[in-house]
Length: 436
Image (cartoon, rainbow, N blue to C red):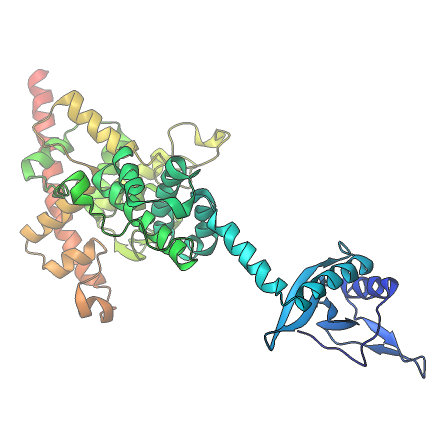
């Protein structure tokens, strides 16, 4: 393990204490030459024998440990006795003699220690297994995977945590999935997490087989529900939306989402520092939902954003929480809640009952894409406007951002939206005049 000098000699407690203090103070251990009395520095890591295989070791970090070195069945073995000074010199010698006696009786204390540790692991609970999985595996996974697995691990702990991991059967996994009342996709995440957790257990020899093997989610919960198709609002529905009686900030937010085709989370977290109104560019930073991108700002979208900036007051965010931003609450300047935009749309649909199909903020992206395609924008350009990676090899090697092409496409789309906005404004003016 380390460096030793000279012949084996009996150690002394004061000497050991001096070595440990020297290393922890940033120095090195030393001994005096018996003939000249000169101090001789010892190399680290240090290993000094006390005789009979008992060895004092000292690391560069200042950790001192007692190790018993011996041979069993012709092979060199090591048994860690404990740390110094928790175990003093006299006690280490006593333990060493006892272990030597076991060796003389054809025993192997190091192997016995490993066996005891292995037997203790066999009694691990699922909660202990989950803790080990979090420490060894989960921390190395991607952030989104950590969140998904993290939710499922909490459910596994809650339901199975007290049970012995080696005793978990496929029936326990089935009962877990059937008991947890979550959507189909979340149940799939739960089964996947359980499968990976017990794969880890099998790797540690805690289980002989993965209890998740052979379990099919469709057999438990039925066929996976069909994926909801994204909605494309028609021109008539967009006219209803532009005429909506909404809070002005919410109305402008919906318009900017339509005009830029960004994800609602990207606009929610946007700060004014990301916008260059001289060059008409919005630099969206990289996030877990997509890579960073520079979005061309059309004159219509720019006018909506400038109106939002006036409404935002002193806030650094494009969509700050409602209130007095010059006298921020105890939570400080922050963006609106992730559900605010969707709730505003839902409130309008329920209260006003417009002739518009129920939609979500994400459907505004699909509306922008589909309407741009209807305006003659090529598929790949419309995909790039949504910051989608192109499929296949083209997506891997084509690093061209299509900025000018996207600018042209978004301008066509803005002109279409401007026509709708003007028609709505004209209709509102005529209704006002008639009423007057």
